[in-house]
Image (cartoon, rainbow, N blue to C red; front, side, top):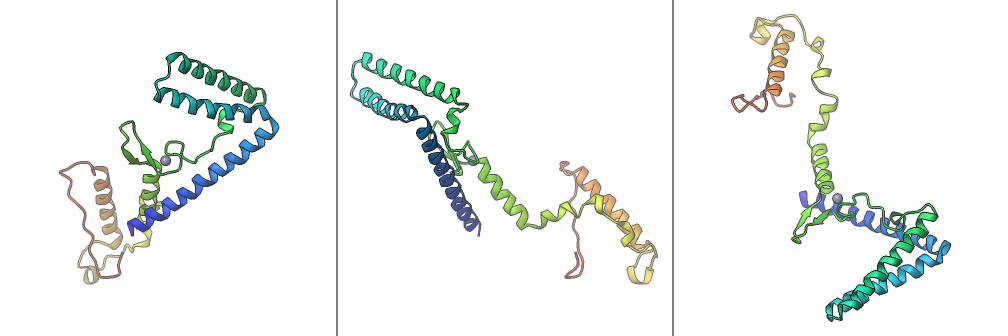
Length: 201
Ligand SMILES: [Zn+2]
């Protein structure tokens, strides 16, 4: 069950990641059509990045690597100024992920290459389990909506085996529940146990 939930969430993530990247491609193409120099720069930047990697791997003289890095710097600056002049920024060319931290993959990788579940995915799993449990009822059923008038103020010793009226009894129960919540962190606090006939809640 838990795996089904995770798998369907991951499918959703795949979809939104794909859609963010497709949208970015459409935007990028639009800006390339408007400002062709941007496309030329991006081409050269890709080529320079590959050349730099090759140069580093083949231990080419450091001067060539320095020149390549300088060229990348100049091209990036030119690209930024074209964007700026037209009221755009680098982020307009990039995908707009719902979660930038994991780029809508649901997982993050740290500097030690360890993969961890992203907080966004954790939160979604928590939300689902919260909704699946009846905890969501807390929004409408809580202390502030408690209505003591729903309980009779007439004691009935024969029926309830108590001289207290149901209303008085409920007030005592409510007070104990509030105390329980208030001192929840206190390890000496005892648990609450509600019992009753089947079907009662
Ligand atoms: Zn995330």
